[in-house]
Amino acid sequence: MSTETGTKVGTKVVHRRYVPYSHAHYAGNLVDGAYSLGLFGDVATEMCIRTDGDEGLFASYDDVQFKAPVRAGDVLEITCELIKAGTRSRVMEFAVYVVARGAATEASPGAAEVLAEPVLATSARGTVVVPSVP
Image (cartoon, rainbow, N blue to C red; front, side):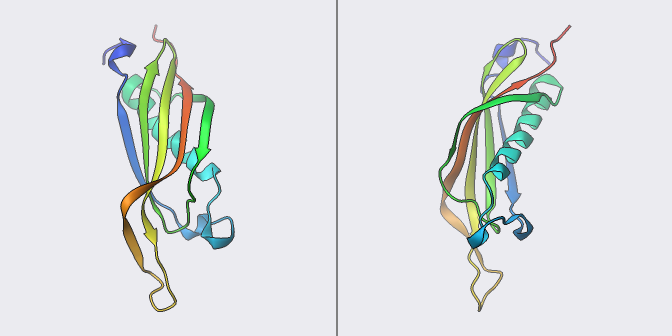
């Protein structure tokens, strides 16, 4: 693995996740905003493993925006892109997109549909730190 941090900028990680109904927290099967932040932690962990061979630790989030609801029954795509790499810090941009959504009715309780266009639900920028390389 290269130790030049500049070669890592632009690296992307993508996860997909189904939101179980057990995670619904509010009326209308809404999931709390912290759910997205937890998913950002998961993709950031994979990013750090891929780029630094370490899980890393989150130092901060900034510019977190909740743009659309996340609901139980959604299928989410979580993206992470490394946009800046310092000696120990890694700045990443994150997004949660809803790519499929439950469409249950009384007649068809398991109905769901793939959305024609993904819906941006949450975005953020975050900083993660990794151990220094000896």
